[in-house]
Amino acid sequence: MPLWNYLHEKNNSPAGANSLAGKVAGFQAYTSGTDGKEPWKRNVIATNLGWVRRTNKTKDSTTSQHDEILVAANPTITSGTDDGYANVSHLAFPDIAQLYFSSNSTNGTALQANSYANVYVVFNEPVRSRGGRVLFQFKVANTVSGNATTAFFSNNAVTAALKQGGSAIINANNTLVFRVFLPFVSGKTSTYKVNANTIQANGVTGAGVVKGGVTSNLVSGNITTAGAEAANLVITGAVSNNAGTFTVRAAKTGG
Image 1: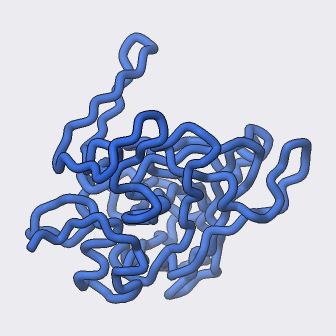
Image 2: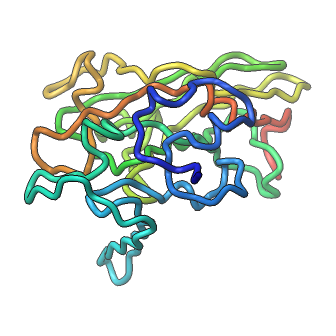
Image 3: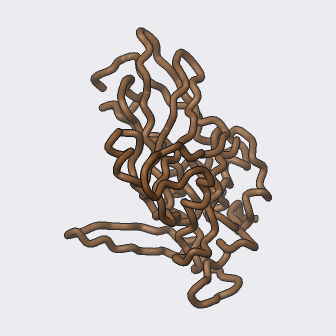
């Protein structure tokens, strides 16, 4: 029995540390010898072709997209509005399958205090903004010697300029890059974790801002029409525990 499938997230346990729930979050196709944290899981997505590994490459200012089919499958091929097993009857809206963190230290062992780092939120389908401006955010909890902080993602240049988030959607068009400030705690090394919670919308001001109803802004990229499913912005306990904690060094400079 493979550990991948085309099931809705509600059919998978939302909790568990280093358990089956964390390994199969998102249900991407993979082999059994895994803990669900591998980098290759980040660019495996569901499309109307089935499970594919998507690679985007840029050369000479031109971006090309390559989809390697891992599991060819489509229950209802319908021209123009077809998203295959990613449709409402199976996987449904894009679910969060994995979290991972950047390292802003030179040796990669821990993150540097009083600086920004990235938290990457990986979905099991490609996602896109349906229009309007919105600032996404979620809490990052401290577990030892620190203060809770907030990670931000913005799809407009105003908040990006304020260093409250970037507009990047990377990997297989399925990963949002959030920015988080890591506060310095004098003489202490701090550890943090993204607990189970829901990504929320912040009160960004200005014309065209989406206020509340954040799920109306981020949708599946499998269908380019207005009928695409809104993304599920719940970070489950399984995904949270599988990501684990990260450390912020007491040092504010150096590697």
